Amino acid sequence: MRRRIFLVVSLVAALVLLFSAYAGYVFWDISNLKSACGALKPGTTIAEARQIFADHRFRKDFTNGIPGNSPGTWYLAIAAASTMGDVSCGITYDGTAILSAEVSEW
Image (cartoon, rainbow, N blue to C red; front, side, top):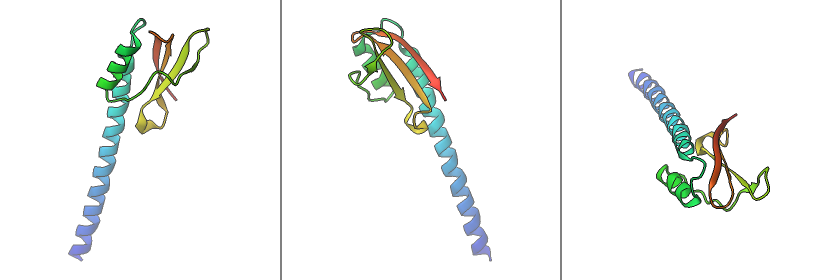
């Protein structure tokens, strides 16, 4: 009987620990993305933007954007991996510099 109680308590504790660790990772991932996106100001060069995202542990190249609303502009969304795209940083750039960057949450 004691062994069964110990196993149940251990299982519950393990589940609570796993859930807490995952929740902490999601919170860190979202705040990390918001911090990186907030560091992108209009006029930031693409090289500087790559370094900002590398410093925040995101690996993204600025060559896979889609055409933006204005001619000669591109749009790229970088998502927090733990949210499967629910939280992302939308970046509009002209090929050489950032025009705007904003966090979007679904």
